[in-house]
Image 1 (cartoon, helix red, strand yellow):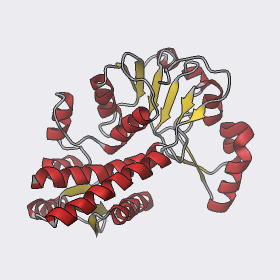
Image 2 (cartoon, rainbow, N blue to C red; image 1 turned 90 degrees about the horizontal axis):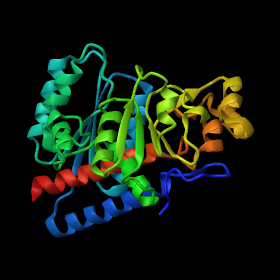
Image 3 (cartoon, helix red, strand yellow; image 1 turned 180 degrees about the vertical axis):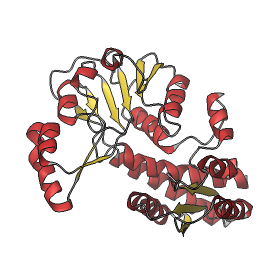
Image 4 (cartoon, one colour; image 1 turned 90 degrees about the vertical axis):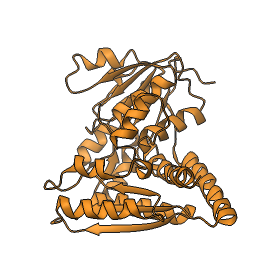
Length: 316
């Protein structure tokens, strides 16, 4: 067992999400093949996207591709940005009523003219594979069976798979969103961590985060968490995914490893950076998730697992 918080003399070792994500998807695929063979049932996932946001298109495309890999039947409802709340609610109602649809996800954020809360609450909780419906949020808080947002569950899977100790440790979650921060804190509490949540109003952030053996960061600000925020030897999980286009900023963020990222920048026009300063964190952390190649891959894998779970529950 790797003990969080132990002193490290060398740079942080990487907690890569790719191998575990592949393992999870392979297990899901095997269970789906068995479900099809013995019961003639294939899980179905409906993905709904509204508008032309390029990032949303990529995210939904990745989810559809993962469905193909594991054997989930998928359908993609791409709607124009002019879609009204009423029209989207009609589509959700139709998907709720269909027996061949086990999971429904609506890619967020939705265009400004749509009532996002109304859409989330309209999805059948039994098909809410994103875990955003108030029923699932409440069940999570009560420690009852629930669909949990995919990123936090993926992080827990990664920590367990990597033999990172959770029970009894001091954990700090930076960010309080309903998608990551709050459910992450609940999952850590359920595994007996002592949890602190930090946010934009936290005073002297570094003095709080430096006490954490396990630091999970999801704030959407490029490289904000530096070495001064990290306890030596701590495990740091970086949920952020930010595009950087300035070569000067790339050099500042990556230090000795900047040349590799500058090559990526020259080819793609950007490179991806998390919410944690990569060079600074690597000098002090014990373990650190890379960006890309860390948490993001697990998010999609856990969506596949949630969809299989939805099919199993609905049909049992």
